[in-house]
Image (cartoon, rainbow, N blue to C red):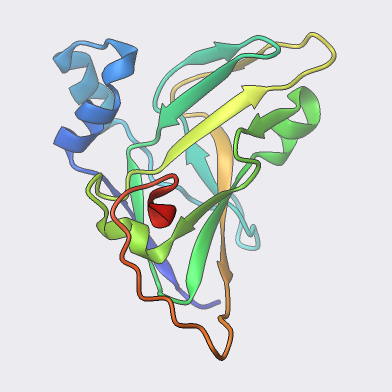
Length: 168
């Protein structure tokens, strides 16, 4: 297997800024930050790197939450990280990413927000099932995929931000 990326934590300062909506105390944010688990594969031949929740949450059918993961990823230029819900959570609860599949480009690493990866998910259960995730539970997964460009590609833009930043 070829190594194409490296996961890291974002800075504590960036993490605290991005966790602002949760209303945790400064002391609690320090504890959460120290407990951040970097993504990892569960088995030697797993394609996906499990991404772990930084908070406890419960989603009833139709509810959505945006989770700051506390991680970023340095990725080789001809690869991207694709984020999906964990298969079992999708199967049991119809847990879905709001953007269907998250695409983390290699140039996101250097963005103003340090390339902080967020995962926004919805419980789309049509069976009335609620899902509960505890801090440290794997709730999504990332897979690295190589991509190509066209012969006449002339992209010269520079990223500085996340969602929608390349079309501004």
